[in-house]
Length: 89
Image (tube, rainbow, N blue to C red):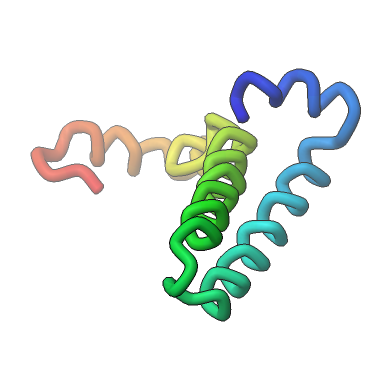
C-alpha cells in the first residue's frame, strides 16, 4: 500500500482513502466472523484483504501522531520530563 499511496492521493483525498479502508476493515471483519473457518481458501483470502486494509490505515496516518503532536508551549516540560525519566510511557 505504501507504494500505491502517492498515486492514490493524487486521485483521492487522504481522508476519503482512510475512511474507505476503515469501513472495509470493519466489513471484512464481520464477513470473516460469519464465514468461519470451514473453507480455508476463503478464510485466507479474507485475512489477506483484512491485512491490506489494516496496513493501509497505518500508512495513511500522519507520522506526527502521538505524544509530540499534542505538545504546546504550556505542556512542553512534560515531554522533557518523560525523556529524562528511566521508564518513559
